[in-house]
Image (cartoon, rainbow, N blue to C red):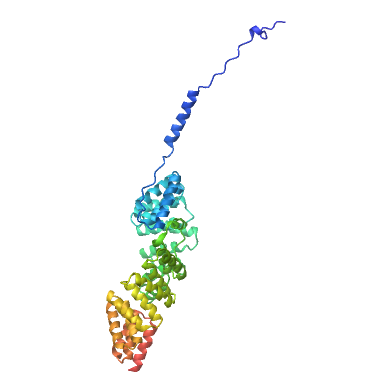
Length: 445
């Protein structure tokens, strides 16, 4: 049977497939590439930083950070590390540029606005406040250092209400947060709310992060309340305490890895000495004397630390090295004399002190130690003269009053001795030595 649809002559023609238009596809690809590059951030060149004349260790760190940016031009981390390196070496504008680029590439990273704020805080506190608010917004809980820094800056700027909000947030995040308690105590004292200030202070007087500052504030508070003995006791306690331990700051600790070279080592040593960490400080200074053997300051600090550690013979060697490099150093003479006095080499100490006195005749320390040394070798008249000179230079130095009073009492000059010892007690009512000597003077009348 004839089927017209299946008949060879009646079969419908197969439609031809359209060939792809290669030129149109190429045009689409080029358009996509153009759109991408128009929207994608352009690679930004690192700032020009001259490392000529820098400490070689510093130059190496900066060059390494610059090379890292060149290899990773769109990495916020690379730019942030460049800013972290530059901020330690007075490349202020270059570091600011790097932190701004880092912030643009890593918009959710609180490190870069925070470190940028720390960089500009001394010179541009308004900019620092903006940057710290951004850092707090990016890390509202941990770490809490951005909020601590912001609250403290707001107190200094007189923005008490906002500062108080941040202090209370810190207390919600960390029970008895010592820096928040100290901050609120300062606010309450400024507001004249002394009882509340004292209540906050009582909670942070024994914390190693705030003890020294809290006792100093307590002395001011008690003085304002009319409690002079309490104020004096708090002031003495503040003076006797070590420097407050810095609050943990992981962002700055990370950036501090870029602090290298002589200056950084000396700063580290000084910070450790402030906290009586003598062994660690001596280790840092040993690195300086090894890598920078002609540096006179490291030898001086080494001698000072060894004197403080009751190691006078070692101190003497370091201080003689310091004076060999810097023979006109008054502080070097003063510390070398201390090491000799501790070894009871009084005649040698007198020679060193007299040489130092020629360099710095207005230093009370030279006159006081000469008075002590002259007493020990039987030169009482010279001792009296030097102690009088020490008092003339520093009329509030209690040990001088006590030493001179004791010497005059031994020489039979009781009236002046009693007057000097009484002045010592007026300046420092708790001075047990002066009280004992004054009683001896009274008994001898």
